[in-house]
Image (cartoon, rainbow, N blue to C red):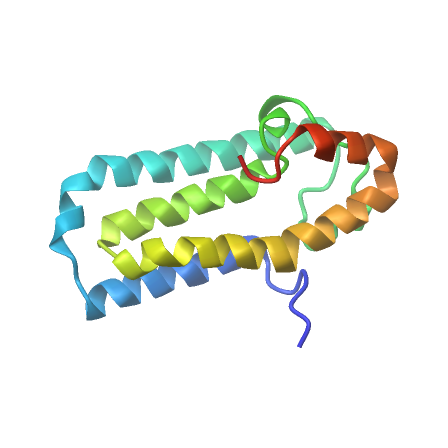
Length: 150
């Protein structure tokens, strides 16, 4: 089964958060309880990044639908997008990190690289291919100067 752009990124994030929660029930780790402020900081930072990135897309009058990158009408390369090509996904990874810390889920923290790998393979690379077709050399130049994540 081809999973490219099949599961919306917020759903993927919720699935990983759910797995982190389930792992925290089966193997609780009280040590993380000391880091609640870090957990909430990660969640808040992630939410703010997602909101700012969405506002940037709306100001540029381009789609925020990750399932249809081929409908993008402009290349956003300023603000958060000057630091990361995928600040919304960075935000989702921050939210996932925060919840893993909050739940005390060591498994969840170890699964964050799996989340990143999944997003790279099944969401980001297909998006990049579509954006390359639309924006050509401008997108190539952007990719050469701005990292995929951070």
